[in-house]
Length: 331
Image 1 (cartoon, helix red, strand yellow):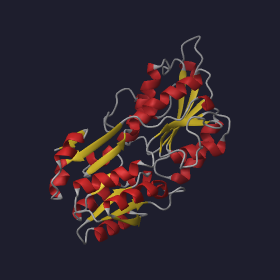
Image 2: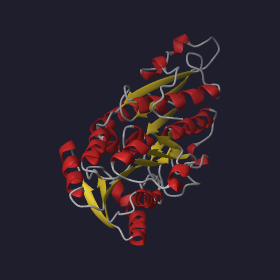
Image 3: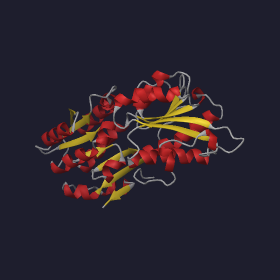
Image 4: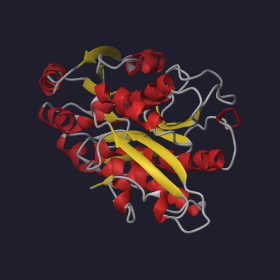
């Protein structure tokens, strides 16, 4: 499923589900908290939320009959997360869905009793949410988004589509509480040694720094870009894609939205699928299961999207093997 598709039926869930007073007589209304990344106008975030709510409906949790959702969006402002987490916990829902690592950690700080189900978290072990995948501790479980070993694959794909690759900038935002470049660094370094590619750290805080870093990379041939899976990068994807195009820099991304917006190549998990799957844990908790009884689930659906138009603009001859492997080719 494409994240850009607006899934019908989201409707009023963008704000809140109906109050208990609207439930059919005899049904107990269950309260679900949701702390979502991005904002309610982002197409990808809408698809994530809608996939979750539709999956819940398929399990018998129907809007206006037996569920109410308390929904909060934190956009790209990590400073708001803690206040919104406190607000949601104060409402005492029976379970909370956490969109992303920042939301998960903020909620863990506010409650050790209300069950938390996360979706869209990069490598939950490396991020310190808990240690064993098959034995979640405390009140948290969920569905992982990207695992650390995937980073080496990004570099391999970039070198395949740009065979002259000699230097690869690793773009990340150092303001992240737990910088993802450190999580993915070992896998990148292993792949770089094998491919004889020099890794260049590219910390950025703004659109200006994004432009400067990519411009410097494009001054000499053999440069490429690997964009780290961060909320900052997703929000700033337009300037990243434009700067890469202007400076003739091939780039690989972790999410299909980048390739569909004009980026060269993406490979990663279908994040909307993780939200859809998260509904199963929420369902089981509402039916009496404890988070510690529900193992953390790894990604099961991966997709590679290739933008052939961008490849041609960069003067790259795409190997047939990549065209065959791609789940989607944008002409």
